[in-house]
Length: 267
Image (cartoon, rainbow, N blue to C red):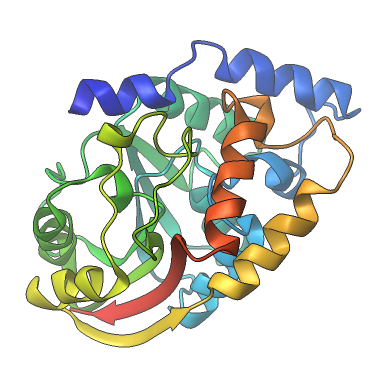
């Protein structure tokens, strides 16, 4: 399954395509501000809006050591390091994404505040009680064993540490259209209902402080984004077949086959 997940996200062209997009947008890659990367680095529904809201609700501050678990190309990690002045560790299973994250960290001048590891969220290579916050955005859909992903998150958190989640869950039982951003084929997708996901979090030893369904807001924003003309910077710069994936995701959110939840829990 690890190899299947990595194949899902590996194109061999992430860095090359992102660099081309930055140049096309008129940006000097030798003088980038972290905020310049915002339009293309948040690989989840509602993008930077969702990341900012989650950071607020989880009360992430400068003294926190944060784990971005399933970090993609590092957008959330850089956002927290830049705007919250947190120390951030990013981990992702995809080697190409890890390499791209390191490169973008350097371009944004954040390599001293964001460390990058290649690894699996169900087998984290960190000691117990290492982090104050674990952030997980649109990751568990690729993980069949929900108890393990949240058990590992609890293990690496300090007592009273927080788990901040922004996740897609199953809605109605109607068949989904593929590809989707996290799965080109149904066998790579492990969606569960919001109730089942919450039960997995609680069974792992977390106390849920905040659990909010934001499907309507996400669908409205995604529908609006699909009407905008193409721009140089965006997830399409490194996500294969992004337009098709985004359309299928938006349709699923709009008609209730998919839902999206925002949650914060305490260890």
